[in-house]
Length: 85
Image 1 (cartoon, rainbow, N blue to C red):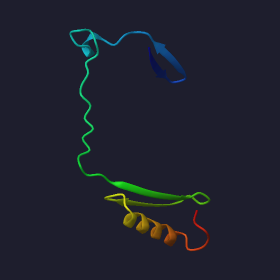
Image 2 (tube, helix red, strand yellow):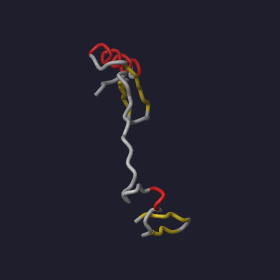
Image 3 (cartoon, rainbow, N blue to C red):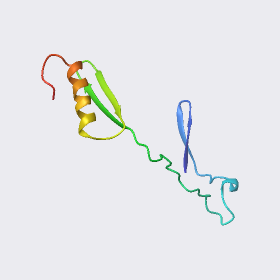
Image 4 (tube, rainbow, N blue to C red):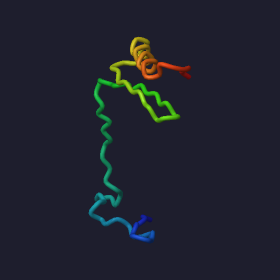
């Protein structure tokens, strides 16, 4: 069953997909999933000051204490007055 959205109404179709998207054994054609992110990763740190929506973000090549301390310094610089929770 698939949903078809038209302006002002929602209708459902019980038609099966055409045979063009099916293999010879009448099952859907499947392909192998490729999550090819490679060996390189990027970590993103972020903070949000809720009362005014100010945000601080920082990307890092690894997740370690040095990058986290650098991120905390950015958060402190963005919040010169008051407590940081």
